Length: 138
Image 1 (cartoon, helix red, strand yellow):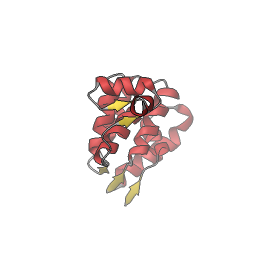
Image 2 (image 1 turned 90 degrees about the vertical axis):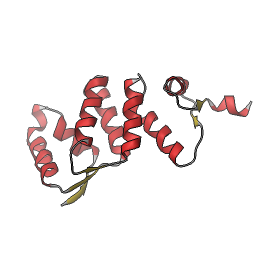
Image 3 (image 1 turned 30 degrees about the horizontal axis):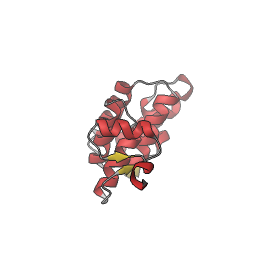
């Protein structure tokens, strides 16, 4: 079976929560049976956000969970974008910002532009060409 996994399936497979033990087993069984597990980048972005905000996971735990899922043989994803997200996360930034910058660059964008000055600063420290819009319109 070839599936596209939504965020909640990955969360149920990873998070050990007594309230969702039955769905955890279902999610794990589904992932084990699948011959292809397509994981779009937005799913990993939501996954990282929910682990951090909803479950209080730290950076290393989030990175480890994403790496474990991405390492499953059946998983198909945009690996360069996921790797960029992991690098941004480990550098103290946001996983989603890293993936957005990486995919944007591959699509032809040369500067990551955001009003989120923290994201811009973190990406710049990581070596990404990033700017606040006011820097480009002045």
